[in-house]
Length: 406
Ligand code: HEC
Ligand code: HEC
Ligand code: HEC
Ligand code: HEC
Ligand code: HEC
Ligand code: HEC
Ligand code: HEC
Image 1: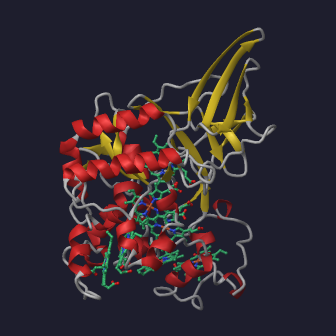
Image 2 (image 1 turned 90 degrees about the horizontal axis):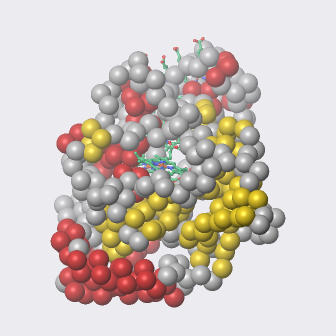
Image 3 (image 1 turned 45 degrees about the vertical axis):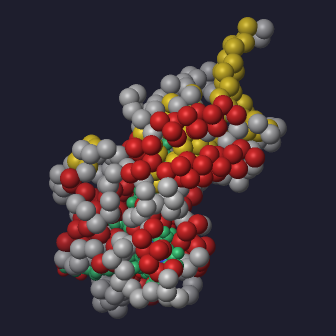
């Protein structure tokens, strides 16, 4: 595809989304057209990237399974099935600790909207913004972003599983705050590509944005691979034209996951320019590994795993237990991985009933201190699986780990 047809394709996609009611305002399409032509340099740097549709022809099973994972669903355009909060009357209001402030969530043909209503009648003011982007698969929760021209901000009301609408994590209860800018690192971890036009830090081109974490985020640009293998009925791996992390060194495999699972870090090179298989420390400055530093369970699986004796005394990586092409939730299946290196029979403590659940005792779920929101006057925070594999004291683990029947 040459540049002109790329631009045409992008505009067509935006228009198609528009027709499905996913994007909304006509002026957004205009913005898209304008920034597409002025950001041709950026578009060129994404050359070679095709999108997931291009992989489906030959990797259909992988696509079907992968598109149900949290990675793929982690950012989406707002639509009926992507915004998980309820818009039904009675369920679409978030009251706050401030009797003169509530939020109302509404869905219409024009899109999805959040309104802050403040004051005492008849002296009431309100501010309405349209959902522009959904962040979070919803396994735990979702935060919503809105566009003001080409600037991206966070909405004050989020959705949390089993709770419903809540004040966005870190927001003060009882205040309507619409001014938190969304930086590119947030979108780098939760999406594939955004055209960052900073400054200010939250300015983005609205074309070429690729939501969700797609195949080429981890495998690199796919065009040459597709061209090569198209001419044959089936190619023979390895294909040097496509990155396969299975062939990376242990450090580069860890780097791939550390890109998003080792905390925020300080960017050294522009966001969205990292290519898997290259050293991450040239791209992102992450804190020096310190075995004694306290690490929160959220977003820091790499540091936590590195504290574990399992990791230090073996060649273990994240891929030892995880296949990112599918959803994995079954503790028994994970425990089988433990048994590749450990023996249940020689265990000093356990009796057979829990022998197939190693993880609830040695990788307990714990509350994070990094995602905290106010709800009904309470501080609520979700639980995340601790990746420091070790012996925990009794009060850190559940009293009766779930028995899993085989
Ligand atoms: C979050 C990163 C990530 C994403 C996204 C991703 N993969 Fe992979 N892929 C990997 C890793 C890591 C391996 C190596 C797996 C291993 O050996 O454990 C791999 C291996 C593969 C392989 C080699 C065969 C195999 O299973 O080992 C194929 C084919 C593949 N991926 C296709 C895809 C396709 C198609 C998509 C999109 C639907 C995709 N991948 C999305 C990380 C990813
Ligand atoms: C025209 C068919 C075709 C298309 C389209 C295609 N692939 Fe492949 N791919 C293959 C074949 C054939 C293999 C080798 C057998 C296998 O692993 O399934 C392969 C292997 C791979 C591997 C492993 C390579 C290795 O060296 O071990 C990865 C990773 C991969 N594909 C990713 C992708 C991604 C990402 C896309 C979309 C951008 C894609 N493929 C599109 C046919 C295709
Ligand atoms: C581009 C950023 C990025 C990369 C690279 C990445 N992840 Fe993730 N990962 C995320 C985000 C964001 C989430 C949370 C998704 C959500 O629920 O919205 C996540 C969630 C997960 C989950 C939880 C899935 C679930 O069903 O809840 C696992 C497991 C995981 N990642 C493993 C890995 C492994 C292993 C690697 C390296 C091969 C990796 N990730 C690479 C960003 C990334
Ligand atoms: C350094 C990468 C990174 C950055 C930056 C980041 N996140 Fe995340 N986020 C993750 C990972 C990884 C997870 C899931 C795993 C975990 O909790 O450890 C996650 C989880 C979430 C979830 C819960 C998803 C679910 O359903 O489980 C939401 C919502 C979320 N992030 C929103 C945001 C927003 C909004 C921003 C920016 C304003 C942001 N995150 C910045 C990596 C990141
Ligand atoms: C790739 C091999 C490997 C895998 C997989 C593995 N471990 Fe380990 N684990 C080790 C090694 C090696 C040690 C260190 C033994 C030593 O130093 O004596 C260890 C140590 C431990 C320890 C002692 C930790 C301490 O601080 O003293 C516990 C507990 C443990 N593993 C539990 C698990 C559990 C639970 C799983 C599965 C979730 C698991 N391991 C998976 C290799 C592995
Ligand atoms: C020894 C096995 C093992 C290794 C190695 C491992 N994980 Fe996990 N991981 C698990 C288990 C078990 C769960 C819990 C699954 C569940 O309960 O749904 C999990 C869950 C996760 C989650 C979801 C956390 C949550 O509570 O929402 C993320 C994210 C994740 N792993 C990322 C990683 C990353 C990144 C690495 C490499 C640094 C890694 N894992 C290495 C076993 C492992
Ligand atoms: C009911 C909680 C519980 C379950 C389930 C459990 N463990 Fe443990 N594990 C412990 C405790 C407690 C210790 C420390 C025992 C001691 O030092 O006396 C321990 C110790 C260990 C050690 C260190 C042994 C040593 O000699 O130092 C390893 C390795 C281990 N467990 C692996 C596993 C594996 C693999 C599984 C699953 C087959 C598992 N554990 C299931 C609680 C549990």
